[in-house]
Amino acid sequence: MKDLKHSVMISLMGRQADRFHEYQPARSLSERLALVKQVQGVEGIEVVYPNDFEDTAESATTIKQCGLPVSAVNLNVKGQKKWQAGSFTAPDPQRRAEALADLKTAMDLAIELDSGMVTCCPLIDGHNYSFQVDYEKQWAWLEEAVAQAAQHRPEVRISLEYKLNESRNFAILGDMGRALYLCERLGLPNVGVTVDVGHALMARETPAEMICLAARSGRLFYVHFNDNGREWDWDMLPGSVNCWDLIETLFYLDRLDWQGWLCYDVLTRNGDPVEQMNATIAIMEMAERLLEKIGPESLERHIQGGVPALTFRTLWEKLILRQGSACR
Image (tube, rainbow, N blue to C red; front, side, top):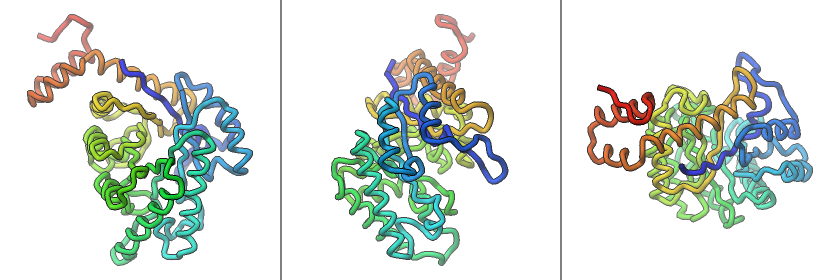
């Protein structure tokens, strides 16, 4: 069985809310790190800039002292009021400059925290209505910002996370195609893609196929796992809705010999966040064991055969039945 590298977003140990309810209370950085360390099987953490860095130097020291490696620094350029009109694609050049400065700072922190990875989902960049923005200018501004940042620290990978919408009705990087288009336009080796399984599902993509596309382009830098009903980014437990998509995604990650992190972006709307992350990692480990039980060789034969009836009979037999037994 392949050893999975489990990372947890520490922001998910803190306040979690929607328009109607607060599900988890606000917690300090130290409190959230203490909770993460209680998660069984956790091996790394994803931190968010600027949210987790009220005092940048002090927070960096606290993170380094927690004893868990940093899988990535996640840049948030969407939540503050100043980003309401956009970040990298804001009409105001001063705002665009501030977004670029934040990306460079996140890259500097990635070096300081011995990560070498910045992931960013530019959700505030895009549009809501026809004739609201100049698409040509938006794309030129986005390309310019990412290119300048990539040259700031060539040793740091910038991993762009796509998502169909939220908070823009139409996010500028809405799917894998546009994310890879940007990477290929820039042609820079340290610019790639974060595949968030839930975002792929929401875009009506097949997550395993998107993993393959990014890998074939040499742009698969980082992976987020969660789940949803393909209609909204609910950040549910992996495999709780799309079980076979989870197994197929792990199958292709194994086939590709993926050595990177698997980070968990899973919300806790019921219960305790430590319990939620314990379950998340346990599900991922059990999914990998099920994949081993099914057998990669068996799956390869079924893929080559191309007969879903035979494939899914095998899948359900391996899921339900004890070793050695079979359905009539």
